[in-house]
Each structure stands twice: as structure tokens, then as C-alpha cells.
Image 1 (cartoon, rainbow, N blue to C red):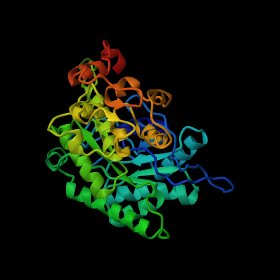
Image 2 (tube, rainbow, N blue to C red):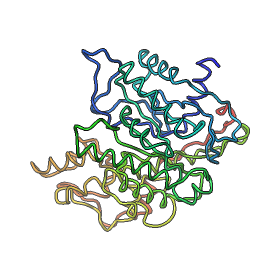
Image 3 (cartoon, rainbow, N blue to C red):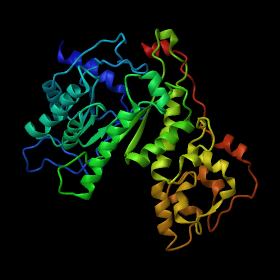
Image 4 (cartoon, rainbow, N blue to C red):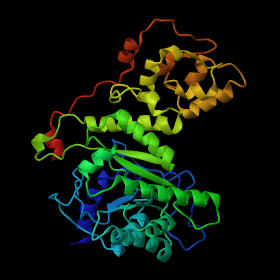
Amino acid sequence: MELNDKLEILADAAKYDASCASSGAPKRGSEGKDGLGATTGMGICHSYTPDGRCVSLLKILLTNFCIYDCQYCINRRTSNVPRARFAVDEVVKLTQDFYLRNYIDGLFLSSGIIQSADYTMEQLVAVARTLREVHNFRGYIHLKTIPDADPLLITEAGRWADRLSVNIELPTHDSVTKLAPEKSVHTIKLAMGSIRRKLDEKAEEPRSPAFAPAGQSTQMIVGADASDDHTILNTAETLYGSYKLKRVYYSAFSPIPQSPKSVPLAPPPLLREHRLYQADFLLRSYGFTAGEIMPQTGNLALDIDPKLAWALSNRDQFPMDLNRVDATLIARIPGIGLRNAKRIADLRRIRRIRWEDLSRLRCSLKKLAPFVITADYKPAQGATSSDLLRKHMADAPQQMNLWPELQAA
């Protein structure tokens, strides 16, 4: 098979891998050195598709052949899809060529399981080692880790890769047992735990050999089982606490249509995925708990974002006086992000916050108006109920695709 044909098949097969962000990579440059590629301390800049997927890395599978038969995976053993396999040298060459053409800033490499977990992991490690040692590639490398592989191979992978990831697959143990019976949640968590221990050892002894400086992440399939968003967010919160993950990525699942006519008219799985990412950001960066975001079973609202939904459910905490409220609570106000929360906290040390300050900071005035008090502004008490506010602030409905057959073609 020609290399271009392999690339077409294996790049398309990799699009279901969502965990490919490169934030957290160490600063590396090739200036004054005989090296190829670079990263910056702020992370590599990316382009994103409308559903939030990163497209600036060379994101491919080593192969989409697989000995497993996970029911949610398009590349499962029993799936009737075109198959291909790269040689190690072919992936190395593609990475170099794409970088020199300024198409990419790094490599995201995953694979189906061929022969055995150890054999597959050896191939993935060989790609990263060859790029680093032979070609002095200094760009970003993310390797998907095979949980069943020998821990020594995972340790070596961390030596060459910026980030490692182990897929948790599904939100619950029962779902993995049912839909991916050849995989073990216990084994997956052991692999994640071993990576965490290596990262902790590196933090305690900075002079020890490098190990995955951008940390580890995981991916969770959303929609393949009956788990609701309450369960998903509680699972994510547990994973963050147990394994110090940089990110949990959510990949929306929808059945692969058998014909263009069976394509759904609307894409609710992607909207649900989007809301989960917003809720996950509240978990990681805003100090929310899963219980605050989703106090009851069920799914996140699709018409409003999770922070606004929380605020509307907790009207007793609002309006907050921006000149008096604890600085840690400012970012919880709808329409105020982390950066502007810090700016407001810094500014009020100098003078009182006024409405004009919020406008200059380009906060979302429409969204925050019912929830704040400033030196010269106060919302009318009890003027608007939560139900009316929700209708007023809900995302505008979008026209559904009337011609899905043409889009699918």
C-alpha cells in the first residue's frame, strides 16, 4: 500500500482519539543546535474544528488492525473498515516531512493492538525514540499508552514523550465489562497509577531522568452506554484526584450510520460533549465540585452553560457585591472568567469597582447583570425569576441540517 493511502486511512481512524492537546510541554528550542522542531513554555498553538478537536498535531494511528472487539470502537476486530499499518520509519518520515512543511508542531500517536500489548507498545516507543535520538526532534510528542504493556515499556515511553495517556474508556466498570470485555478497568487504573508514581518521583527528584513532563491524560467515551452526566462528572472528579490528570477528554459517541439516509438531522452528542468540557473546566480550574455542578442524577442542560445553570439554581448567593465578595467567588459569577476575576480582585485594591470597569474588561454584561452589584449598579430585587432569566440567556436555537445526505456525501 502506498504511504499516502496509509495516511488517509490511519489519519481518519485517529479522529476518534480526542486527548491530543499539548499544553504543559516544556520549553524546547532548536536555535543553535542541530535539532528539528520546538515547543514553548505556553504550549503549542492549535487550530480547532467546530467541535473542539485539535488539528495541528499529526494525529495518526500506527495501525487500525486490532485484536480487541470493543463494541464502541470503529476499529474493533469485527468492524468492516479498510485496514492499514505504518512501519516505524514511515511514521518518523511523515512527522519530519509534515513539520518541515509547517503543517504540524508535533505528533500524536496511538494504535490498535497488534500481536500483543507489549509488541504494540514497543513499536510506539520506537517511533518516539527514533525521532528524539536519531533525528533530534524537539517538538511535542504524545503517546497513547497500552495498559497491559510491561511497566518498563511505559517508563521508557515517558522518557521520550511529552505526555502519556491511558484511556479509561467508559464512565463505569460495568460498562467496560459489557462493551469491552477484553479490557480490564483494574489494569487501566494500574497503568494510570504507575504513571502518576513516576511523575511524583520526578517531582521529588528533579535530576532524575525525564518522564512525561506534560503529565498524563485520559479519554472517556460519552454516549456509548447509559451513564448520565452526573455519573460522568463524578468519575472525572475521582480520576483527577487519584491520578493528578492534566485533562479528561470526552469523545461523543453516536452509532455509525449504515447509509446517508440514516444520518441524524441534529448532532446532540457533540453538544453534550461541549457541555461536559465546560463542566470539566469548572472542576479543574474554578473550584467547583461535581456535586455542585450536578447535585442530582441526570444530564447537563443543553440550552445554557453549566456555570449559568449553577447560578440560576443558587440565586440565594446572588447578587454578589464585587467590592466585598471573597476573591475566590468572583470567577463563579456568570460572564466573568478566571482572568477577569483576577483583574477585578486586583483593581478593587486600588478603588471601588464600577459598571464601566466591567465593560472595559469586556465581561459578558448581559450574562452577569442579574448577578452582580458594583459601586454604581444594583439589579432590581426580585425583578426577574430564574425561569425568565433562563429563557432570556439560553443559547439561540440553531437551524437543523435539512440536507444531511449531501453533508454526509
